[in-house]
Amino acid sequence: MGIMSEHKRRYALLLAARDSEYVKKVYGGYFNVFVAAFGEEVEERWDSYRVVDGEFPDMNELQDYDGFVVSGSPYDAYGDDNWILELCVLLQTLDSMQKKILGICFGHQVLSRALGGRVGKSQSGWDIGLRKVEIIQKFSPCRFLESLTEIPPALSIIECHQDEVLEVPMGAEVIAFSDKTGVEMFTIGDHILGIQGHPEYSKDILNNLIDRLLNQDAIEIGLAEDVRSKLEIAEPDRKCWQEICKAFLKGSDNQCPKYVLSTEDVMFS
Image (cartoon, rainbow, N blue to C red; front, top):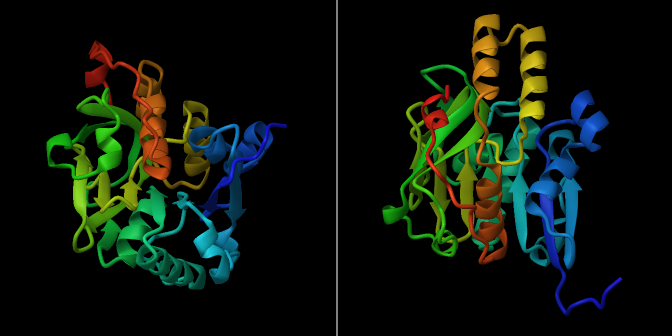
């Protein structure tokens, strides 16, 4: 082991979903999926709290963390489950402390709700599969985006949601949108970032999720087949999305890989 630096960065993953059998078997749980996507190999510590089961960090230890990530969830971000209300209070506290918070899918939505925005069902129904997201760089006040000199104007990301942010909180900036969802990303200052899509997902995780949604009769088989056919011919820009998240959480100077437009860019669902 190497010599420890004076400050070992510490992050907390707030898990709003229980591990699926597939993710447990293949990846060892969602915690490992997130750390593989956003973590570094050295000089970092990641803790997980299963907020979905009422497990929350000690309020007296919040100051010890450099950042927090809120995961996706099958629950509604506008629901009044006790753990969701407690999560909203925690997010308000972290915001007042100017702690960095990255919200993913449900996390993006509940972060907006907690800070005064409005969340609800999407009028256009489910968004599942690959979605091209337009980045509004020229309007973005975010320093972390400025450090990513190679960021392209549009990126594809895996989506799986039927709820969305309808109104962002006061003081928030919408920095990305798609033809399906008006608020794909929002920021507040340099310490809040919400992303509607799943930067951490790989296509196999989405395919398994589609299987589970079909078994629950949550989606139609026609939609599932359409999504899967498009997944076969296109890839999400996972590397670039992960560098965006790392740059936000850590203030790094990472760069997105060079992006070349192809015919696949018109094939997203």
